[in-house]
Amino acid sequence: MLEPVLKVENLVKRFGGLVATDNLSLDIREGEIHAVIGPNGAGKTTMISQLIGELRPDAGSIQFMGRDITATPVHARSHLGIARSFQITSIFLNFTALDNVALAVQAHDGHSFRFWADARRDPRLREPAMAALEQVGLTHRAGTIASALSHGEHRQLEIAMALATKPKLLLLDEPMAGMGPEDSARMVVMLQKIKGSISMLLIEHDMDAVFALADRITVLVYGRGIATGQPEEIRRNEQVRQAYLGDEGLAG
Image (cartoon, rainbow, N blue to C red; front, side, top):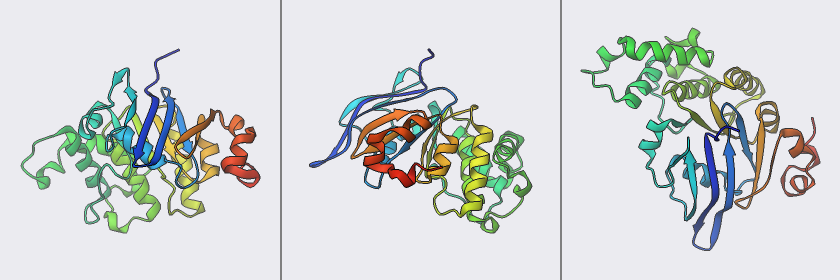
C-alpha cells in the first residue's frame, strides 16, 4: 500500500485542563476525500489548525509525504503542498475573479513583478489562474468583479485560489457554510469533479454533502476519533449513532 499523503499519530493538544485533541490518529490517502465530522466542540478546528501549522501539538506527530512536519511553520507547509481553503487568503472584492486567483499564484510562488498593473497580464500568472477557475466552474465569471459574485461563487473562488497553488493536500474547512441548498449542490458537484486529482480533508456539517463526497469518514467526539471507515460503515456504526449522528442524521 502506498504511503499516505498525510499521517497523524497520537496527536494531543491541551488548553489548560481541556483536552481539545485526544490521542488522535488518522491518515489521508492519495486522491481520496477524507471527511472529519463531529458535534460543535469536538475539536475539528483545533485539529485543522495543527495540520496547517497554526497550533503546535503537545504530543504526537504529523507526517506529510513521508516527512515529519510537526514543527514546520505555516508558510513552509504551504510550499510543501498543503493548502487550506477560505483562510489561505482574502478575496479582494474590487478585483476580478481572475485577478484574485492570479494574486494567489503570485503570493505562493514569490514572483517579483513591478506591480499588479503589469503582473495581472503576465501569462505566468494568468494561465494557472484560468486553469484553476476552470476546475471550479468559474471561467465564465473570470472577468467579473468579486463583489458581484454570489456567496456560493465566493466559496468556489476561494477554492480556485487554493488549487492555483497546486497543492498535494487541500484542507476544506466547512465549504458549504452559509450556503442554501442550490449552492451546496453545486459545490458537491464541483468537488466530485476534482475528486481523485488531489487529496482532500473535508470538515463539514452538511451530512448529505459528506456522504456524497467522502471515501472515508473519521468521527470526532471530545477531541478523540471514535470511528473511521467508509460512509456506509459510519452510517451503521452504533457508537457513532449514539454519540453524534442519531437516526435522523444517518437517514438517506
